[in-house]
Structure formats: C-alpha cells, structure tokens
Image 1: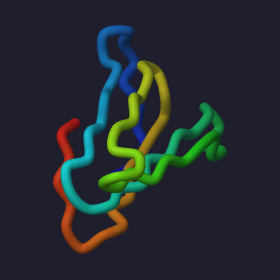
Image 2: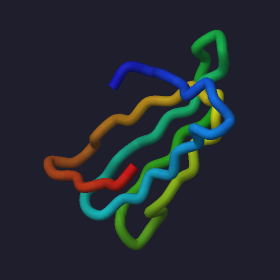
Image 3: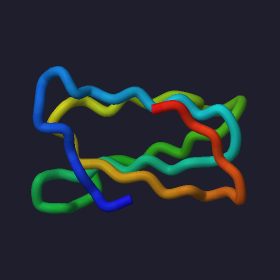
Image 4: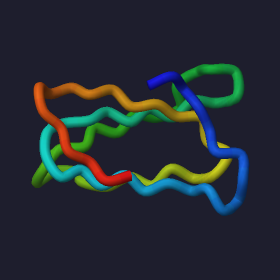
Length: 68
C-alpha cells in the first residue's frame, strides 16, 4: 500500500492481526522511517495508528487476515 495518512482527528486506525505476518511502518512528513512494527500471532497482534501519521503496510507472509 502506498504511504498515506488520515488527516482528521476522528480517523485514528487500529490494526488487529488475525493470521499471518504484517509490517506496519510509520514515517515523518519528509518520508523518513520513524518506527516499524511487525505484527504476528502470539507476539504483537495490534498496533494503533494515530491521526495525521504517515504509514504503510507490508505483507510478509503468504496469507494474512487483519481487521483495520
């Protein structure tokens, strides 16, 4: 997915992993990586994306199920 943000205070996003592995990357306004989170079962299964935060997802397994 192309990096994007949700420019509204009401548009925060929670990503819940159900199956597989997903990497969530946060960027600053200049496109530099601020942080990465690897979601997988029995490790980190949820990440919250604050409003106005540039982010993208990378699927890192053959199958994935997530609930944004």
